[in-house]
Image (tube, rainbow, N blue to C red; front, side, top):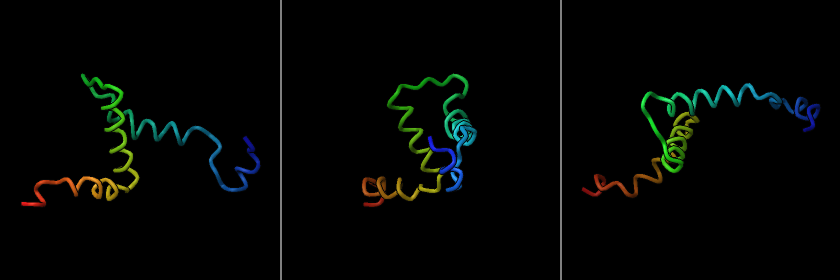
Length: 73
């Protein structure tokens, strides 16, 4: 990794931000008492959580709403 060039561009070169995001996004949701997750279920929940926490929930709604039977009623 070219640390000097990364610093020049203002990019983070440490793992602290990633580790903090991991705790905030993943662990708080996935490590609750009594929960067990399969790989597919965990990935689906984490995908939704990432969208919600990154202010991209509208992207999810665009995918869900065409299939919403309540809209057709």
